[in-house]
Image 1 (cartoon, rainbow, N blue to C red):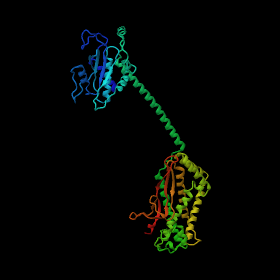
Image 2: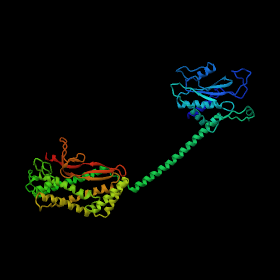
Image 3: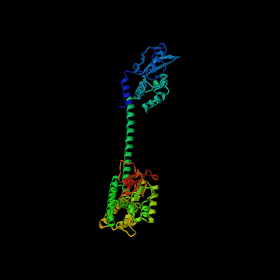
Image 4: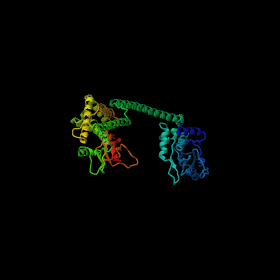
Length: 512
């Protein structure tokens, strides 16, 4: 039950206990005046204020009475509305004492509800207050203002006899004597009933609004589901799955490099020993240039102290580096492998860049995926992969010719050719996943690095890490690809670059 309803019930129960205000138009002798004078229309003044503010003491002082007042720190003495009369300058004045406020909203509502029922308990209309005196301690801010009292009385009466009824001009005695027996007093239960109806109407309006919002929510969910369906955002690809595929590819590159190195040494150096190093290359200067050997620096050929790398280790790392660069350039860098070395590749990449600036990132990613899949329809994968294998073999021949002589080539056995074919197919399929399947996660790009560049711990990892040693200074070559993701925060905003997987590189620690 609300505070107002509780206060209303308390007021109804207290009606029999409250002092009943006499009819101001009945000729009743005034106890404070001479018996010969008839009772005049009183001026009713309401005394209100916080508990203990001195309301009863003020009335006692004015009326020269000795009613009980509250002692400091004790509970309030005045718990009901009570009036005291006196005559001032030939005017009959009725001072109405009231229960005090304690500062809580519930107490204020309860006191004001009692006030309304007390005024309604006047035996005849009008129920007029001539004034309200509000007392409060000087050092304490008032708990309730007169405007709050008027506003509350209006809310209680609503369409019933509210403040306007309290403030109407009194009717003459003649008109009052000839009025019908119909009472103008409002039944308190009617007030409560009216308030209940108002709350029910407000609740009904809230329920209607909730139903409307629920319908809007359902429609929004349907629209969102439709949008997801149109965008085909059903890829369940996770970054961990992409990393696992990359690790499989890197292991294939590692195996292929080791097998080719063993094959070259067996075919070209029959009496191979551990002291055979890259310094015995026939065209050492071109080999140094190929792997960016600088004066006094490390490279895949030699250390600053002149120590050469063992030949088999050299070919192992060099072949892995060549394969990484070859498939990166022919498969991963182009928008589609079929567009490698084609002017169309630059055009479509610029077009994709323009779309990224104008559309929401997810829309742009979906466009990239659809465009890639569309290019796949006009592509012969086997033919393109054969070309990539051939370009890889040509790069290996270039390495072998610089090491041995200008006529030397790599004659791969059938098993090595099949291994290279499977490796290129792995790279091809992984590229298809990155560009044709992944949408929500953003754009992904494998990473490789040039020979003999400064080591970047944020993007690189030593393929043979040694925790007892400090971070290396030089990345001699890339032996396993890394992976980055690119995604803008907002439409047209700057792109965020995230290193998903560090590239594996050979460092100066190869020399011990």
